[in-house]
View 1 (cartoon, one colour):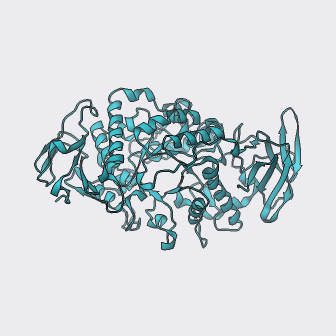
View 2 (cartoon, rainbow, N blue to C red; view 1 turned 135 degrees about the horizontal axis):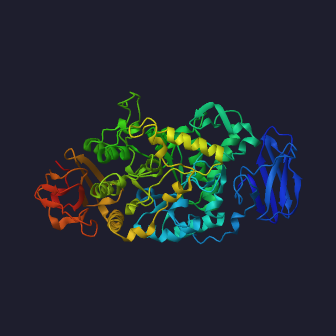
View 3 (cartoon, rainbow, N blue to C red; view 1 turned 90 degrees about the vertical axis):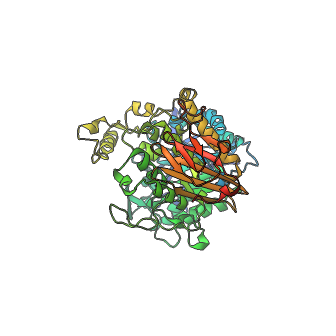
Length: 618
């Protein structure tokens, strides 16, 4: 049972808040048109204050008053709902009132995970939890096995990516009620979809973060982050800060039945204490759930220790976002060279090495800075690496929010999708990429005017060093505060039924069906894979398991014939090609001859190997 916040039980509501260093904390109950009721809380050890009261049922709105200051009251830092926004009163919520119907649900194991990342506000026309729920059957038909919801913690304004969250325990009210979110998860489970929630523990947003009013110990100047002082995970009173975050993690699992957490920017969670917070987080979540729960890191350091078990000196997390694959592919097919892309060659050889290892940098120096990056991922199974060719960061942090398929031809895009979805790593799709959506995903906020001006100016200054932007051109970068920036980012679902989008969608459905059903693509004991560069433009992926084997030849750029060195390579063994008539609007067939595959343009072909063809490609 949760220990913080407002808890309704046996006709009583218990309120508990951490407010060390204060002389008094009062509960202020909103009575509508009647004057509010003020009820004193009692001091407890370690800076906590609590009280238990009758006649304050679910739906009651309340605030806290500190030190008998009659001029200011604050929402609960552990509020389960902020119906009027992050600056308004908190509301008592009874999580037990929802009638769950997912008893017996067990999420798919990591090796069967295909993740679909989505932003609730732009995924559906409604931009709500209910709108997302309505469209979940489409994702089940697509063939993904999990959805990953971008951060849900309530934020200032009516639109945001979610990384400006300040009410960590309250789902954003602009998306719907807490029960709307529970209904989304319940429905997903009935459709066979796991639900992962993106949580942000490395900072709080710049507006409405009232936790600071209750305690100055939430942050520490011992550590710095891109957002200022770091979260206090190892200084005075850090035990209570950690408790606050751990209870938040447990809330998503216990009260919303989510199947996993994606922990944002774990490299910014600085902790010099005897037990790293990430290890405690992972252990706490897993040991306090009656079903498997995944904990996934977003981390730029390529640290194998994150996913090694604690007994082997690791943190024990299940998987980590591995962006090296995205960067290598993007350099090859879109010729990106600025910013962090300058560290990557994009050669077919390095793309193959990245897939073989899980990430590219394993301790060698970065080409531009000479700084050492990464560790050796020896012994880590491929599903522990989450790879993508699009995600919210890699699309939305571009100046115009353009997607990969907005910058390259669809033939090359189809080839990239095949490599992503048939690789043994855990693939992640970003909403809309399965049909090559026309809509961008741009950076949007809805802050008050003064802060909004700073955000707009800062956003544009980020790109001042890029070659395509002169000083005057910076003004053309979409304004994060403009409503049009948000509206442009909504998916246009009707376009899925029209060419060329319908063909791209069918390609994804066929690939995911193949991934789910073909024995060679199951990652299990005895399964093997290999990735090789056949020439400067082509990568070959072989996967084998239980006597079955597949060869996937991916031509990432240009036309040409490539030698694969197999005596038997028959058209009758082809399971899928990116030039199939139901996939490409203008098919230019891939030609198979003994020992060779000939491409008229970038593309991919998947061939079932027989007999001695299961051997490694020469």
